[in-house]
Image 1 (cartoon, rainbow, N blue to C red):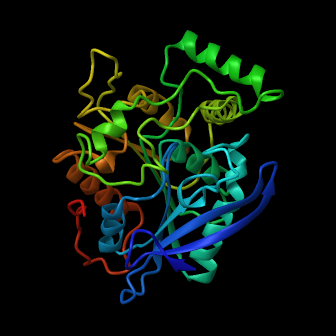
Image 2: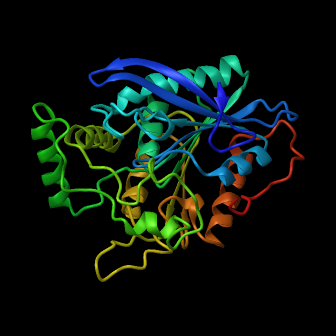
Image 3: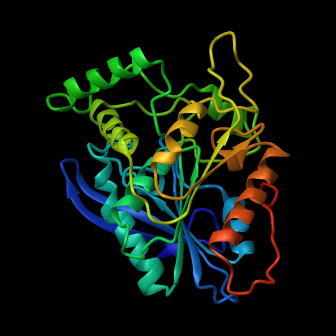
Length: 330
């Protein structure tokens, strides 16, 4: 355990995950606890593609709500990325399950929490849904919050099928082949404070131009999505949030504020009911792809809705606890 890059109050716990074809693999669990609260509730956050945990104000929100906060930088992302590795690459989404298992073990068995909320964003939202389905009936997860989950490819049907077919064709012989796909630089520019946004993040771990989309990675994502489309059986309450609209960045469309510029929000609305038995869908007017990075008043509404849902399905030990909203960026 070491001090984390986010500074005082944050700890980083390296989780050895053995070796793969590229060599040694680690994941990193970031922890922020309110030492005086003795909370029995915790949240475990999973980031998206070309991403890592940096959203201090999200941790502030959860701690104020009475949760100890944990975030997992998955293998080959952020704090866990090593020089010998292909950034953000896996050949199966199930490769992430061992580090999530270990993080859950630490949260519950080592740190002694009785209640665990799994919070996933974008690709992390897809992974969180698949993981919650995998551990159903075990009591390891008590609720799931998905922030703009990656439930389908944000392309027309013909292009979705063509892209998936190309990824499948390449994954065996050329698994790391770069595909002509990726996230526009307009979205990261819209959120970074050196460009048009409010937020600061490490551009080595979350570069403006992103990382290449690899064939086996996209094939793995598509397998996970199609499994979800057939129907999961998550047995705990699920909250899905998405913006009210998407926008596709082009050379003529440069302003991507106030909408999801990465994924199709209608896909999220369509597939959310397939996740489990009890799913709540909330749409956020003016929301960005990462809803907690949205400008006001959308950001406050995200935290208000999350507070309302959490108090209903994961109530505090002290019912009189106040209902905070997210803090301003630090």
